[in-house]
Image (tube, rainbow, N blue to C red; front, side, top):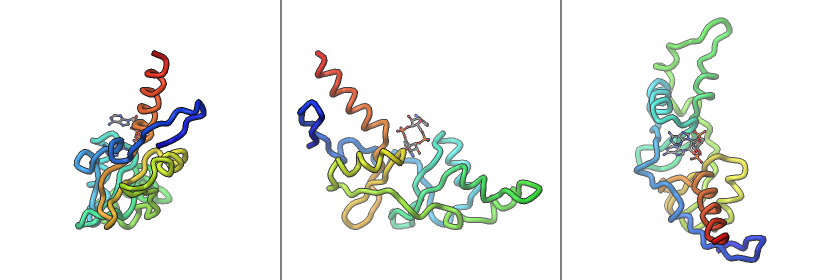
Length: 147
Ligand code: 2BA
């Protein structure tokens, strides 16, 4: 539950708002940068989670980070796409909440991150909470107040 400036209480549950893991584009530890770039390009997302074989969160990989890692001094070193693995370049610092975290803590993290990862109490990946989902929920709440 969250209090809006109007005094209204907003019911907000991380589990209800998140995109479930089966609908989240991701890569796994051990995948090549080439594979990650394919997934990122085909999905259309800028950054996606990196999971281990047990489905636990390990980091985030993004197109800019991959491109930066293959920039040589005089040329783009395309061969590195096949040689290097996602864990070599991923960002291990992951904004995350658990299924039972308060929606408020999720909202605070989304100020500085386009999405945050959701995990269960054992650290298994459950899904992501995006800015879009939160904004949509606020928009629906405003619309219903105007009626
Ligand atoms: P970005 O990829 O930078 O996308 C920024 C925003 O652009 C998204 O905001 C969404 O509104 C739109 N967008 C980008 N690609 C899209 C696509 N293929 N289909 C529909 N809309 C698209 P959010 O929806 O708030 O997502 C925030 C961030 O969460 C995304 O940043 C992306 O990094 C991640 N994300 C969202 N949905 C995902 C999914 N199903 N799998 C993996 N990552 C996802």
